[in-house]
Length: 184
Image (cartoon, rainbow, N blue to C red; front, top):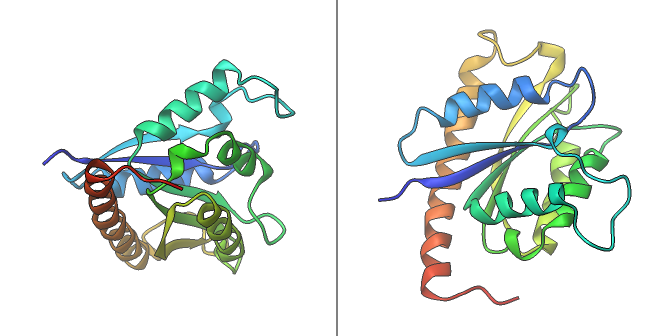
């Protein structure tokens, strides 16, 4: 069977962010599986325009192409002021059909809340895009530090559960899209 193509999206573009550290840890967890291949879409690496253009730029086209290629997503998001970053919303809005009938999981981080307020709002956004969001979340409390041996066992278990859900839904929806194109 062809491995599921999972795109890990790093949603923060701030200098000094923890998103790349959290994403590296999650990519390492996913990389231990042979039923998943992983690509990383780091929004900090895309030169998106400050305002939504009338015609897509090459950076927008490149991002949308990668979203279209992926069969599942893990969105790595911080929680800023009980929400997710504007950079992530901007990127999500550049694609539409490319998100449809694909699973989306969340790896969130924040202080005390572990980013769950951001995840709650992202579920609403992805539901509007006809994506299927996963029930379980990997939540990192930055007050405990980055993913480390102090709380690694629980985080690794959470990552396994999320990856299992993404793999099941991703393969089921891949088969479904192949048998019958999704119509919204």
